[in-house]
Image 1 (cartoon, rainbow, N blue to C red):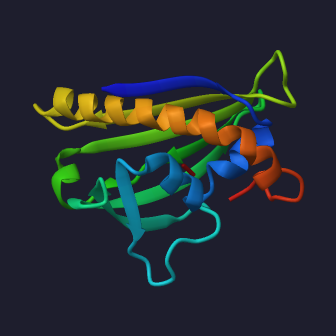
Image 2: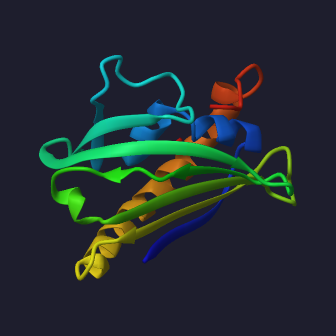
Length: 171
């Protein structure tokens, strides 16, 4: 099943692209409902790259949800759309009921204000066998909270991730 967002964010596409490669943004849009702790020896990097990273997830910072692998790759389409794919997924704990995980975040300019606003499409395809409808409901609720955080944080990304930030290297 698919959980989907289609948002207009008040920031330039380049700033949104850098933001979705920021572990700090990932933690900000996940919390406080879900908290993530890096399980890698060096901790969270400054920027996600095409790499793998293991995290421990907790519900409301207290209840263990298990571990998850974040496995990212970037896609650049001819029309200018940039997509971050997370094809990792849950490894242990309650989240391991999910047998299929593909999270995509697509960044493209808003045609009405291409230098000032971003069309952000966020899709998660999940399967959990007979529990898929329940998993979908939980992720749908989480995605609504995530949308609120994205809208609230995006206006600051132009200054935080604007000029001088490298747009390479998710939320």
